[in-house]
Image 1 (tube, rainbow, N blue to C red):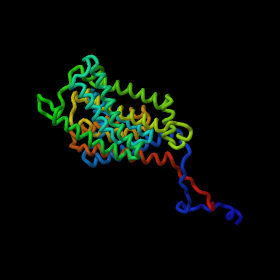
Image 2: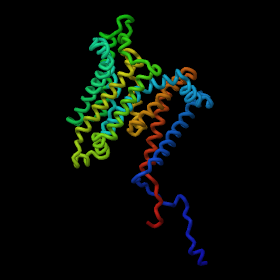
Image 3: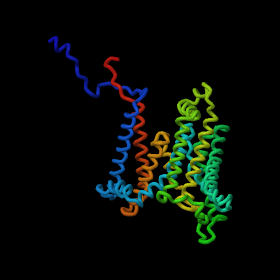
Image 4: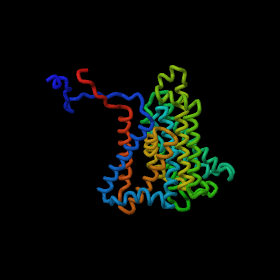
Length: 366
């Protein structure tokens, strides 16, 4: 009788009370595990969609891994695609660290490529310095195109999401104006610029993509140094965490936001240079398509970390190349590849909930 009274009553599962709490901190290895599980979940869902679309389940691993990473031509394609993606991923990461949502990466890429092409068309500088000058002008053009939304944000309070996004259309239409007008190739009469000369193209060492990837990695190391070791990067972490508190303790918030946004525009301009002087060898009308979304995706998955952004860019480039293979052999539309990207983004965004929150059981009667 006494034992029966003292014995705790087992509550039904549905009658137990839980509360949602914000985590103070989660160890980095648990965060990595949660993120890895989210990405794996995204790939499983994507695999199920591809199988439903007609891709044999046994061919998925071969298409995405064996045929893409262990075939020399496909691997070169991945590296070729990854170089500008690293640039736009870094560009998005730097801007997002300053809480400036730069959605104008494609417009800044366009102006970077236009600047590089202008140096080629007007033959500015000696031949030996032509390629470095094209690179510098591309970075400056992307920087200047990012300056407009920056001033609208800091001076007039205009939402940068709207201004940067709308300026993409302005840049795109100006590109078409050039390619269907004064910059049309006089030899073929197609809407693209004349072919760059050999000394105006990235040299081919360690394969066709060697120079582009090497340049992207050097820039990545410089960005890593800036955000992790420099005083500006230290200030930028304050701005990212709490801009008001950063201003209260003496951090030059406006100056750091301006530096981050202009750096972001310059990096995107460099991405345009890599496509024009590396992949295309001329200015084309659709070279920038998809890079803006990819840059945002890369920054989001990498959590704005430069080294992680480089790794994610390689993974996204692999997905692009494998998607092209699926288009050819299984008639999968390119929109399916974009759908896979969106699914992975949603899964990663969901993982952030579990990293930042936890469920705690509330004691009975409290």
